[in-house]
Image (cartoon, rainbow, N blue to C red; front, side, top):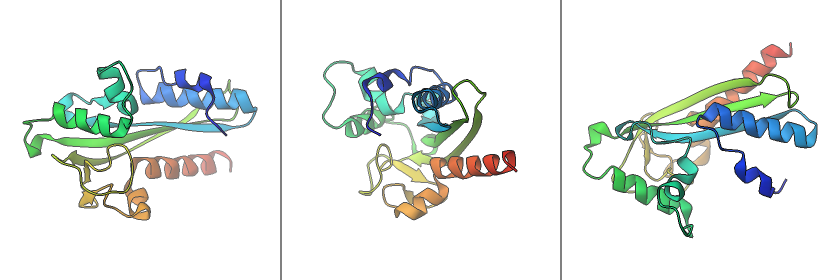
Length: 175
């Protein structure tokens, strides 16, 4: 389904849960069907957990004005700028994902959360993935998410884990 203009305002919350629930409720109301949505982000310890729920719009929010042609590149450049001079041992980070599922727009949501740990490199590595993947070095994979084959990345990624956890919750709930 193409993105509607009114969807741009759905991620106004200050937490992943608020944003995921808002999106799931929006689509449940719009379609009349059960819906799920996620909100994900990168949390860098040396930046007090930033960019967090603002990850996708990090550079746009920090440097308002004309949007850059490549938001991912602008976000990565700003992240590296903010971490300049931070030693490797303090560049710890994680990807976090919250998934919300609603049967109807008015019912309480089922919520699951997952994360994967790593650190932020000083320069990008790899060509796959998107967003911060070229800078995020996975502790489990011993490579960046942009260097990992898609199936390998999804096995340990925050989103992969969150959606697998949601499947387990829904299977138990609907037995």
